[in-house]
Image: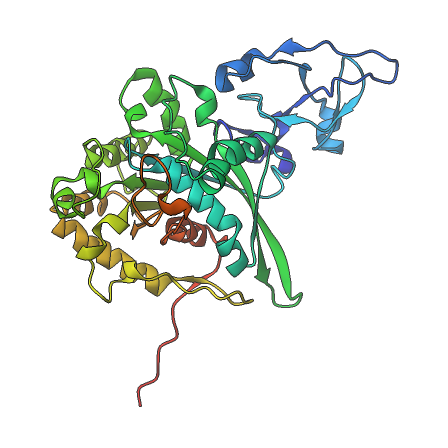
Amino acid sequence: MMLFRRLTCPYCYGRFLQRNIEFRCTGRPGPDGHTCAPVVDRLLQRHAGNATELPPTFRRSLWHQVRDRHRATCPGCRRESPNRICPRCHSRLPVRFGKIANRMIAMVGARESGKSVYLTVLLHEMRNQVGQAFNASMSEADDHTRSRFKADFERAVYENGELPRATSSAGQNYDRVTPLVFEFTTRRRTRFRGTRPVLNLLSFFDTAGEDLTTGDSVEYHTRYLTSADGIIVLLDPLQMPQARRLAHADVRPPTMSDQEAVLHRVTELLQGAGDVVEPIRAPLAVAFTKIDTLEHQLGETSPLRKEPEYAPSADVAFDLDDADEVHVEVRRLLNTWESGSIDRYVQPRYRSFRYFGVSALGAEPQDNRVRDGRVRPRRVSDPLLWLLSEFGAVPARRRPVEAEE
């Protein structure tokens, strides 16, 4: 029965039954002219840091649960409201929430691994070039995502040529870690009706690696990680001693940190959430950033030197053979960087994982600005497209085998 279906909030990743969704009053006069007074929502303040006075919340009656799952009448003003909210954090739920699949994607990386820059360019590419190739649209699912992505991310990089601010610790600023939620729509071919739209809510939770080390912060992030459908871990080769020595001489190296430790913390939190230690089910994409700084270490035929070709068509699909080639190449590089222990750690702990090499800007930034004001992304969409193919949100296929003469 739909009322007893379990859902996951795309903002706090809390789980609840569909019947327990709450509503927020519209704040407008009801049939008799009564208006509910706004109040500070303590639950929303605790989860999202929002202390604004808002119309009160309420639970819908059993009659409304059966008759209409998407509207309810406020018991105070008697006005009907469409404003559904999460019962765990009181964030307003996207319009299509509960009607389409939710895909929670956690993104984790150490300090200075380029998370904010990568997320900015990834989402821009998915909304533009990649979206065009896959005949897909990616639109913001709420006002918070719309304003924050435009102001803090896209405008900074693509209009002002500046690097976005680094990810803040959750303990310092809750608003900075509120997930960005997008509606991703593709079309799938059917047997009798041509194509039909396939919709997914994608929730991106971007957390700093240092948040996975202490007390309350670990508890806070465990909920996000264990509820995630897929995980992207960003590792910076320039923070690995041997790769750092092999980088271009003019590269300004970041502050050193233990890259493997971030991967270990994520894995330990995921394994610690279960009763039995077994391979983790959520697919893991390990993306090595700033690959442009090590380009001279790549062979002429390296798959990391080229972009996968996705020509817009009804049959476009994620190239599994290309992903395999990249995976093997990054494995080779790990040994060159004397970091093969990463692969030996990941293999027995995850059911499904892939390695990727990405460059968000395509060139080393200068004084925290995009070099020459031009963003030249390289393979930034690969990790997300692979996860989406694992979820069945985008098609994936092998290349046709050429017949021998």
